Image (cartoon, rainbow, N blue to C red; front, side, top):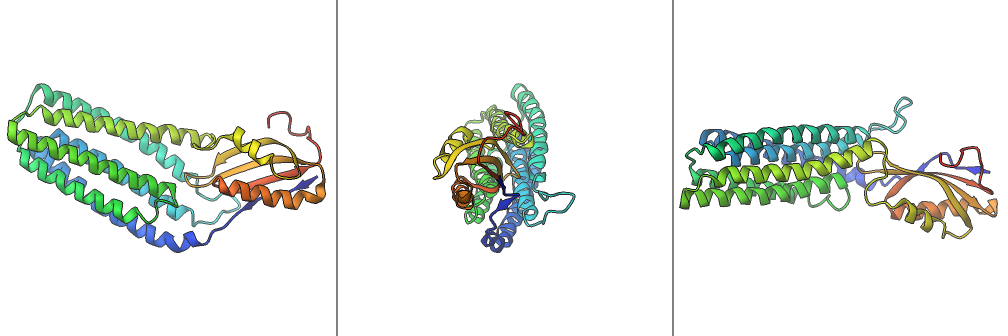
Length: 303
C-alpha cells in the first residue's frame, strides 16, 4: 500500500499580487468608511432612513472588504506545529460573525423605517439625492480598484460584487431623493429604507449559510463530490475511489482526502500525478491521496 502524506501546489505568483490587492482593499475600506460616516450623518440631519439604511449597507461592504483583506494577509502566514493548516479558517469564522451582526442590524433599520412610514418627516430630497450620488461614485471607484483580482480570488470577487450591488442601491436612493423633491412623497424614503434592508438580508443570508457550511467543514459550493469521484475514477489505472472527504481550508482554498484503488502499485506515482492535475482543474489545491491495491476495511465504510 502506498501513502502520500500531503500535497498542495504553491503558485508563487499570487504572492506578487497580494500587496497590490491589499492596497486596493485598504483604499476601498477608507473610501467606504468615510462615505458611510458622512452618509449616516446627513441621514440623521435630514431624517432620511434611505440614507441611514444605505450607510448600514455600506458598512456591510466595508466588512466584506475587511474580510477579503484578512484573507489576503492570512494566506501568507505559515502553518505551525499548533496550527498545522495555518490561520486560514479564521476568515470563515469572521464571515459568520459578520453575517449575524448584519442581520441583527437590519431589525433596527426596518423598525425605524416603519415608524417613519406612519410618522413622515420633512426631508430635503435634493440633499439626499446628492449624498447618495456621491456613494455611487465611491462604490464604482472601489469596484474598479478590485477588478484586477476578482478573477483569481473569491474573496476579492465577493467584495467587488458587493461594491457593484451597493452602487445600484445608491442609485435607488438617488431616485427616491429626486422623487421626493419633485412630488413631496416622503413615504418613498422609508420604502427605500425597507428595500435596502431587504437587500442586506438577501446578501447576508447567503453569507450566513455559506459561512455555516464552511465552518462545519461542509463541501464548498460548486463542488459535486459524486461527479468529482466519477471523474477521478476515469484516470487510467484507477479501479475505485473511496473514503472521499472534501472541505474548505479557508474561503479561497479547498482540500480533499481520498483512497485510490489501483491494479498495479507500480502506477501509483503516475496515478497520483494525474489525479492532482484533475483536482487542480476543480480548484482543489490541497490533496492527501492514499493508493492501495484493494479496498481496505481499516477505516470502516464511511470514514
